[in-house]
Image 1 (cartoon, rainbow, N blue to C red):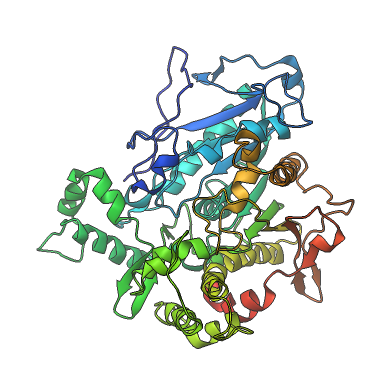
Image 2: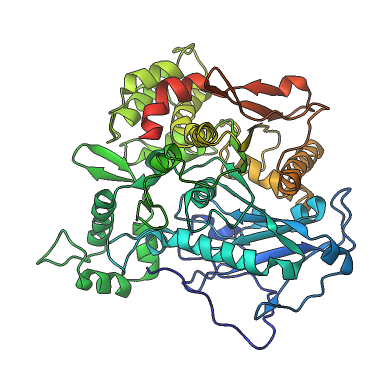
Length: 535
């Protein structure tokens, strides 16, 4: 439960040719991992570096990128003279998974296609999750945010050593999706990390909203978790005494991982979302929105943010049970039937039960997201509307609000935005046919998985993947995304004191000028959710 420390040096070559252990977590994503041995010995990173034979014209069938190894910070794999003369941009990726699941060794985070096509160094890494990464006791035995400290140590290592792999330490782009998008925003804010990178990409996530709890809130949440695994000091049941810490350390790791992975917990006034971060006075000196509005963050940043069209549908099952709902209504493949009235009331109840200040008027949310729908509407449409409302509140609007707040305080920063709205083949096991363009749909395309898994993807999806790899690699190289369809990609700007947020929409069809638009989901984010996201 403590902060990470640098590993000892080694005198013999470290042969880095095996996937690292994933950190302890519930079993949801383990089948998709290339190493399934869950362990506390999990703090490793993976590096893909293009070889001298890499062709930037596309991904070829030959092995065009390698994972590398180091010896005590010295070079053991040969870096060609061509690479030494021109160090490559570095792309440092934080995986998603709601701070509770995920690993750098998941199949769709393989970096060879992006490294090859983009001619960049790709790095990803593990960080501790759930109880192991975010337990907060208010003491050194559970200081909180240790999963973020794992990020910091990995990023510091890359900044110090990546030159040995042909990477440019002055051109590091941090990027991540979902929980990883949120941690990227935390790295932008933190005085510990803000000077270790040049560019940042936040994909479907930020530290705003419910991500950060107060110290009192987080102690109450983790006391609930401790009681769930029978770790209570009966003489001081509302405190983390040394006896409680010792009890937690004695528990089966998977038990701790499971009980520390709930997205919500009950309070006397309803359900409160778990804020895995805590404003600890060190990694996060204050709550994220306070840091943004006071200008306490990395300045002169090149930032790109992005969201998918339907950020909430594939998360509804997780929240169904705490709401007393039947999760089968939101099954990925065979959902049970749902009526317009049921969907409307579910949306209303979902927001009404949230224990936040100011309190939501659930009726207002339901009215906005069910405008134009009726009892005659297709049930998949009304079911999807619940996900739109929830996804906008939890993911889309906090991401946009972070970018706007950063730009407003530091207009010298260059901020760009994309909107991923492409769904063709049925390749994603977590995105059912009734759902829209699900949360996380852009990840496989960014990593070029359609080129590595040719059977699951269509030719048009490979074109979209190539487009996304080009967008991300160009941003890492130059600090701005490339022109689309012959038109420059506009950045955020100000008119009469108001921030205007242009964005580019990635669709099923080839790009043109109509793919550029302004102010994504303005009514939803500015008129409805803004007070709650910023609180």
